[in-house]
Image (cartoon, rainbow, N blue to C red; front, side, top):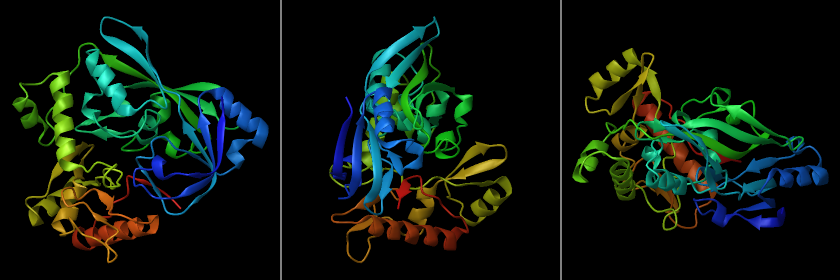
Length: 341
């Protein structure tokens, strides 16, 4: 049943813990809810709409003067399987890490490297979430979506989603036109482990060598050691994307900064660790004058609400970080977080 809350507080629906409101908060459980909203409001694509899951990658600069739709449809099921893989469907409102835990418990590989990423399943194709050498696109088979114009349900293939680095068709031509209802993942019964990223392999060896369970636990250990708990210190995890540059530019930068952290990005491109650049600029632990917002002391990619911050405070810190990196390296780093003005 559709639930609508007027002038809804969103403090518990954004991991920065910002005390903002929305004109309307609509709790979504099925496509029938969208059809009911359309019958009451007309074509929703003509309204100001925001699809908000766990709010773990959102920065509200102001109160939201529109309708927020919050998917609450959870559940995990095996749709089909072969000797090699299972097709597993999860509702958009399912907590992402609950799905990863379920997959590991069922000895199904493909998303274990994405352990402990906050948020819900519905965000995984939109953001093409990724960590430790894996991205959601590597496991997504298809995405079931609901039209915000007529309430119809349709399915997009992996190719239809036009996945890129923290990017997808849902951020471009399909933005504000469809809601993700559920996602189908192809999970392997014979997984190929990815363990080479950063300090992951060393942590896995401490736990006895690679397996689905040790990879998941190693990543949980690493993330817990580096990233603050949003319930204690408001944040959205990595606030910035790692930029990519051409191989020639990367060589010039490495010659100037020999300890610069880089990764191959394919097609003659090199990915540079944004956190390393921010740290090199001396910004780890930086705070604004009011001491309400800043850069985390242990992880330079993470911006934090130190208490009483507004969205504008955090945006100002982000701009200071971007300007510092641009002045030092000549590289513009882009937010991974979605900024809602």
